Image 1 (cartoon, helix red, strand yellow):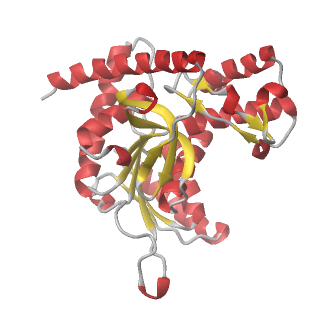
Image 2 (cartoon, helix red, strand yellow):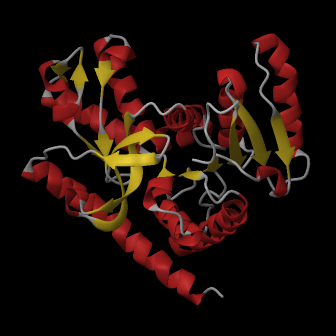
Length: 327
């Protein structure tokens, strides 16, 4: 990442600069959670005039009450993002009634491409975290457009999916979420692959706590976690948990925690996949995706991961054809 987070005379720490592109519910919530860490300077960017400035001012005014001194800047241009250490991209549109999959892909590909071009040229050493949907494909787009090495382009998906899985297990067993560790791999969608053998409750496999039928029901709910919230909200989608997931990734990177989290990362032979962004366990540190951790999978688990990878690969190929036609 750009710069040393511990630089300065006398061991004083300089703040980490994080740009969040998109000041909607997800972007605004990310900015709030980052500000409250009192470790970051945040730039919130959006094309809607006044929106990022208003949210930034609101967050600054909350500082005296919440005891943080974080600088939060709102902007409608990208000059303010210069020399960011981390850039989080939430920009994009949801699928609207009457909109085809191809139209959604083309629209969000154009949006993400434009954002990446603007931010990458101003922060050439930044680490990119993509939140825009369809997530695995948009991470592929960001990597292609930025030209950044694979360790500096990541997608947020598995952290959120694993958190949902953990919360559902905790609710079913009436235990603390802190007792539960889970790993969800694959594409961010219906084809995600929860690894039951590597999901534990207080160190014991989850299969020792729940019947196969009960566990399968929780897996189904995890796969449908996003649409469940969309159906409840009716006019929006999840933002608190996605924002928390992004912040966990930013914390692991900025504080060089070497934390192993499931993220969309570019596989180069890992799990048998090449040149494909897919949800896999990643060691996150100051270098971004410092290592992809390979779990031993059963033939059934690998087949499920391959099926998930196939759907991601098909969409990426479709987007590549679109991008070839774009001047």
